[in-house]
Length: 301
Length: 301
Image (cartoon, rainbow over all chains, first blue to last red; front, side, top):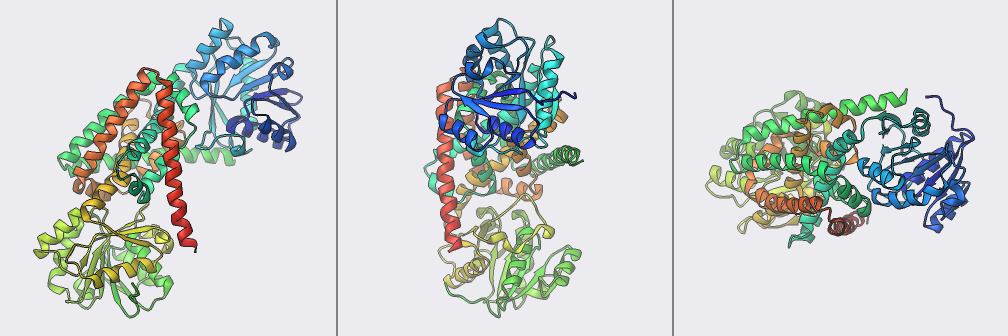
């Protein structure tokens, strides 16, 4: 995958945390590619131009996308369809399009609705690099360093298109992996969507307690982490849960069975079984850390 | 509360994260109190003596507790009873005893079983300053800076005993509050025990998936936080859940109702209702941060 980004015209549609961080990383790398942005918030766009992150901007895709080599859609899942519709009349044959949404099945459906089929130059993608922060003001060039990006090309997707998108993410420091659309959505339902749902639910439950003020006042470490996760962008998460509902409910149901089991152990004061469960969770943490460590060491070489 | 700790003999029973951090903080403050430790792990005790954190140690309480002014029980809830039994024959009339356990009802019950009634010099206490780490090696003198300590004295507890324990925690940088035993256990069930249960359950559920390796490999931010919470000391948490089971199950049941509600919203793809829930969680986070900020600013004055 030795595709060069030099000379390439890259248009980032949506200059929030993800798009903004990508633009900043490309600017810092100085690879000779030309980065432009399309968005709605002219203040943010003007700021990105002023700070040298992008070469130009427009609120209208057709001003910039006609001769683009690569278009990166950086917006919540449910906003992708209308942005694709705007692109239909202007896509050159060579233009590669990718996205960054956390759900891939819904993106592929939107692409099919708009184009009739998934174009050979469309590469669904997902950088696993979110944060509870959002917006261009939270963006930073190092966001993708050591993070994973999952691409979910279809069987007929052009290898050259996949290579260009992979080159983009590797250039900004990420590790690129590919898997099927369905598998991506299952894995992310478990590792990202369910944890966020649990955090949103906990903050919601506790904030409706009569003693809410006290609960916040005495909140210990555990709850603090939950409130941070639950402060993530509501629109983005609404879109994720609406579009990945089935996979999320499947893993949620397994989780609720496990909660019911723990509830029984609590009522029975079954110290031994609780201890075993917590020991097992400890061991899993160690497995998780060993994966993280491998990942980090890979990137410090 | 201008009680001086100067000249006081303080015996810390259990030199783990909590007891070790207390000893280190007192040593750094150089208040003129004499700090000793009782424990089982002679290696840790010898190390604490060698690094100057304590003036002496023993594995037998009677070597140090006979003339103690203050004894601090720093051990998991279910270990408190047997340690109290060892203290019965040797407590001087003036000796104040306190503990640090996360559940106060069970501690009061243990005290009553051992002494027949709660002595006027016994002050149940709980520093909200845990971490997923444990043991003396994780202890640090700044652990209690800006943290809250809840004392739950009974109606007949001596004010002078409460003042001595409060002086101890304020000296090491904590804010001291008092509330009833029952209220403490309700509030902590919601803010600390339930979040830990949810984290243990999630790590447990996901580690039993067939795709466990992949799930750990692609774990995004949300799950990473859960694994960290779930790496907390299994014995301590077993004791907490066994002794605060009823309050935890009460708030767990409310939480599961909320999860059921979200599950229905997912299945209905009810974007508006999901958005409202997430917005509300965002707002709660802001409330929470405003409390944290007030707390921090209080401590930088």
